[in-house]
Amino acid sequence: MNNGNTSREAVTALVVETLKGVDTGGEPFGEVDETTELLGRLDSMGLVTFIVDLEERLNDDLGMTVALATDRALSQRQSPFRNVATLTDYVLQLADESANDGRA
Image (tube, helix red, strand yellow):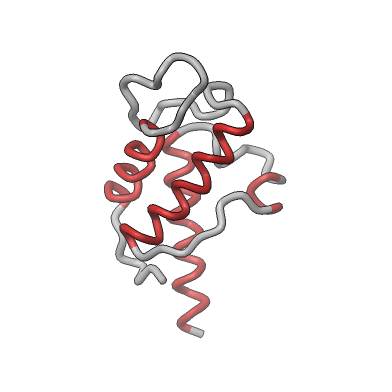
């Protein structure tokens, strides 16, 4: 479980690194930063693969146990999967909520 002290930079770097390893079925992502769009660049299978890989890496590398592809994520008016920045924000939000639940 995340201790609540994981930096935004560490999560962003892991999202970027994981994204660079995804098979897009076409052109590679090339340069990836916080503004890199995910939706429209990944087909549905690529997005699922990316999410599973990211969840595993967040757990293995940062000790964060989060479920990204949930009804909550998929029902939001603004998808957390729009770009690297929105996904990073969502990961940090979930980690913060998880840490706060553990303090009760």
